[in-house]
Image (cartoon, rainbow, N blue to C red):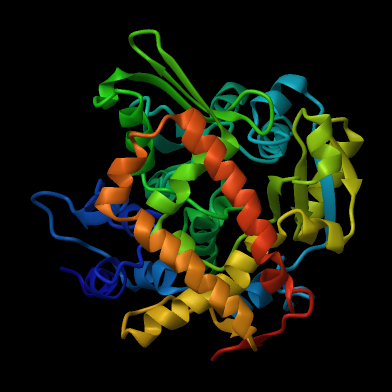
Length: 448
């Protein structure tokens, strides 16, 4: 076993910190592969091969943590003015002006539209995207899309871990310039590789990514299927996580002709039962190392209109210029918004990541377990907020038990989904005072 993989194994995989990004596999020259487990896809030695990794793989591994203050300086030449949302040039709400792209996207179709624009203008030759339904209907794999058709096929979000960076070897041999779409941990690894001079990563000219609050292990999908009497994954012919009119619904089509649908806020009942460990420990919600990041525009004004609206963060000057060109050419509609509005759209998740994650890390560290090092932390967190976190930890702890997971499968979706949505709203309202306390003026300090 190579020294680099030995360190990743002991400090990340065995420690339960793997983010399932696939970076080490993509750098291994085929000596590693992702192995499916109940705790998500994990790197393992390819049968008959000795793992081969150099130090670059360890340095780029986001599971051990990425020093964000350094990464911000490297990318943007500064630290954020607001550490909740990260560095940015301008903030917008917008959507694709192509109705079909807007409808098929997770929210406003902004990422899909941007990739198509980059390809059609010849600004890139390919785009690294995650394509749902490959190699099997319930799986997703990364591809280098080189046509509008391929980009459209890769629209929407995937809410279970999918190791995008296994494609690094293909990026290295690709003839041309690239755009790249990834989750925060995958983007952080890519940025480290760019800094270290990796040939494939250095071909990426534009980095895009979605906001990411929570992700679920694939066991969530399996549980939902079992609750509907389906035990065999081979019954699935199509799986879409955000189908239909925004905010969309989980949709699964089966060979028997059955179509299962669950509204987004209904199938979220599975989150406390199957939330990933990396979701609980990660602090980057808005994909802070991208050129452009995109999330749902959760605001009554937009939700009442329907159709799909995205909050769009132009982080780099390159990203800002790209968005301006797209708006001028009629590809996107963008309305600039103030920071306060952007923060209010996801106030709950900013708290979950920028304070909750650090509380969870401190508890884990207190038990003698490894935690990722992100290079900064809140200077103070109110006691009342820590009490709220105890409640969250209690609920998650109960829900993750085998008994609770089994019991929830016996409850009809119409009841469990509706009940979860009601309880979610009640909990947010009850915990709001503690979560909002000090949130607007929370300060952070760099940890060296």
